[in-house]
Image (tube, rainbow, N blue to C red; front, side, top):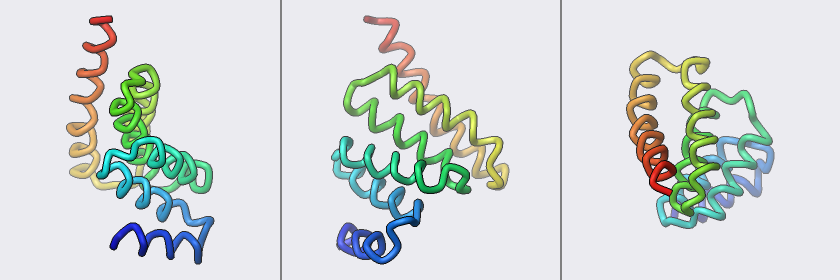
Length: 115
């Protein structure tokens, strides 16, 4: 199982941020948002300048959206979106992440306005 493999990798290299990020993605896929948030925060702590870190912030925002904490969701989604253009990723990848993030931001802004 994927979660067992990533746990083993983290045991061998506990300071590897991308492993924590990947584990967070697995947890997120199973709607285990609270544990996923912990893993994403650990990835940011370990590798705040990693090439993938903008994605980590976006995934954090999606997790908080799932937990209905819209203020934190918006905070992390905006932070991730802000970092997209600073990443060394190619323009196609950057556009893909912008197009992925924008609907979440718009949805959350609408939800906040409805309260």
